[in-house]
Image: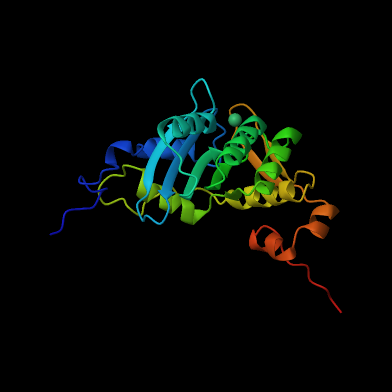
Length: 234
Ligand SMILES: [Zn+2]
């Protein structure tokens, strides 16, 4: 009988992995907890090796902690490209977006892809502009889908033996967040409403206006599975 698999004890990343309960609460799209968790992987040049680690917000936001740690520990050779993937439980606030843009401006050899579980204060116009500016400056910004949750669970979480495929199955709120991210990118009004009442589950709903139907490509609206194709009767 083969032993049940957890992350291998020979895995050098094991001590840097987070606990399953940490992943579950940080990346639950229904949870609006204050703290932010950042899981990151870094690849240099043509190397196939990835460096993985995580950080959280402390006195500074997680993104700032990453940038300060990364720039203080690494000597950048402008001739070596660097690929960074972030998996963030909250999207960057506008101040972090500015700091990320400055970081990328100073290190043009860095390519940054950011996956986010939730959009931080997504109706705040400064935050919305911050995300647009990030995209304009070359950052790829996406909402975490099932494949990113699966990837993070396998590569960043110290999951129990035999639970490699048992990443948390959350309701597919990422579809709503993905639609809202399109609104942000296209500079449209917010369509995602989040209502919080004490002792009640948080409510997520979509309020689409004409401008959303006109400006968001139909395949994106339909891909969410939240919008029914219109039927014309003759
Ligand atoms: Zn921030």
